Amino acid sequence: MKTQISFIADRELKNKAMEKAKKEGVTLKAILMYSMRKYIEGKMKLDLVSADEESEPEVEELIFNNKELNLKAAKIAKLLEEK
Image 1 (cartoon, helix red, strand yellow):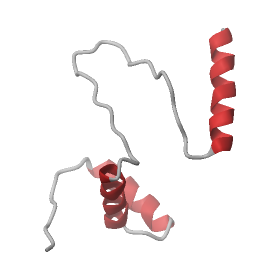
Image 2 (cartoon, rainbow, N blue to C red):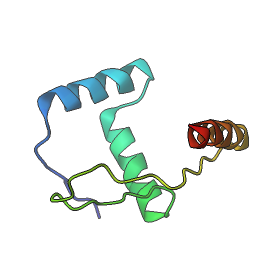
Image 3 (cartoon, rainbow, N blue to C red):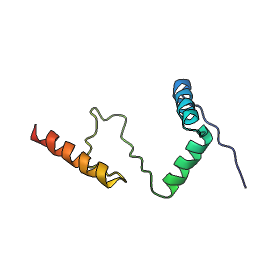
């Protein structure tokens, strides 16, 4: 059974997402469906932060699916810790 999803989004955000999707040869619907599937599968995680928190939360660890990217991120983190 299918259902319809409807919500209000910032026009500029929607237009930019549609433009990028079109350049990549996909629809905005495909992007949103993909995102929902990955969220359900636990392959996409969102962290919510309280609106009354005054400062940006510290990022303790980023884990990428690409091993090479993880190594580069670790090098950058080490350089930032030295300062």
